[in-house]
Image (cartoon, rainbow, N blue to C red):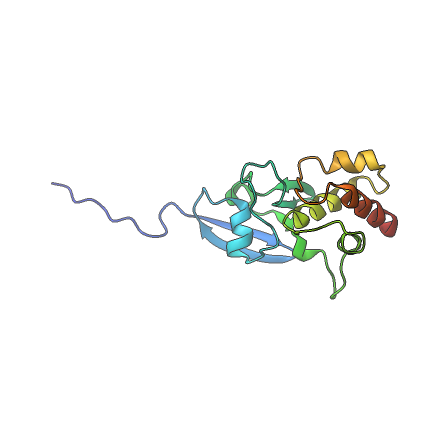
Length: 166
């Protein structure tokens, strides 16, 4: 009778190396590990929030290789080798990024849960369109949900950031 083989801890794991906010992270992970959990649990960058885990809310929005991505929609292994920017990477030398500052100054947040994803989506939007209209801002933030603000001050914040960044 054949003896059942013991599984080792490393069996089935895949090595993933990512650059997040300019720092390299490498870890053996289960192929089913979501990118959002790699960012939060491996890189210990908890500004990227886990909201719906269905790509509906946008709380997990990051910039992956220059594109806005909801990090709950992909596995960490799919992002292997990627360059990622998260909310923690925006501030430089202790100074808030103009978008972060605009959200602060224009009351673009209340509870703050959606804010990191909202700011990262706005960051990508303003890279794509440095001078958006209010309608373009609203369209650009589609897919990022806020239950607190009613969006008026979010749009105002993005408009103010766009002006500051030009």
